[in-house]
Structure formats: C-alpha cells, structure tokens
Image 1 (cartoon, rainbow, N blue to C red):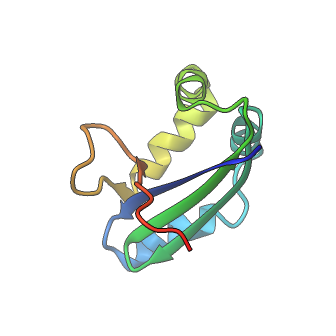
Image 2: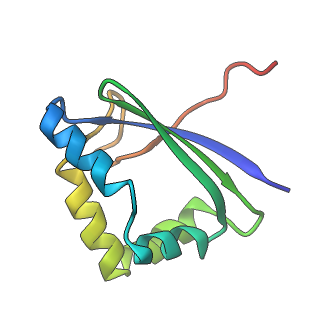
Amino acid sequence: MANRYCLTLDLVDDPALIAEYEKYHEVIWPEIHKSITDYGITHMEIYRFDVRLFMIMETDDTFSFEKKGAADAVNPKVQEWETLMWKYQQAVKGAQKGEKWVLMDKIFQL
C-alpha cells in the first residue's frame, strides 16, 4: 500500500538562482536518485509557483522519515547535495531551525 506525503519549501527570491535550482533538478545526481529510491520512496514530484515549492512523495510500507533522515545524515553525497541545495532554498514560516522541507497537513479530499 502506498502512502502519500506533501511537503513545502521556499526558494530564495532570485530568478538566476531559481533557474540554477531547476537546472539541477532536470537530471539529479545518480547517488541522490539512489538515496531516494533505496529507502522506500516510489514516486516524487516537485512543483513550483513563484518561490514556493510543493513536493508530492509516494512511498511503500518500508519508508520512514526517521530511517531516511538517519541514512542521509551519514551519506557524504547526500550531504554534499543538501549543502548545495541550501544555497537556493529557504525555510517556510513556521519551520523548525534547520528544517527544509516541511510536511503539510491534508485538509480536504474529494
């Protein structure tokens, strides 16, 4: 059974940086792709409106945010990617210190 999570994040309000960020996401590093799929994420999409990003993430039953976070913390390539991406990203209002992507609450379904 698939689980769906929706997360949000803002980008730095600079058109040149936004263009660079999007370029990096045209073809992500293979190590990043592997780090996503190895931990139960089966589908991921990111949408942008202005500086706001919206991620839809579908996972299998093996996924947990805790396991993924622990694996990412000790993966040098993921840390390199995250450090690079932070150049383009900024936390949304209400995010905890150091928190990037913030889990959104579902408030409606049809």
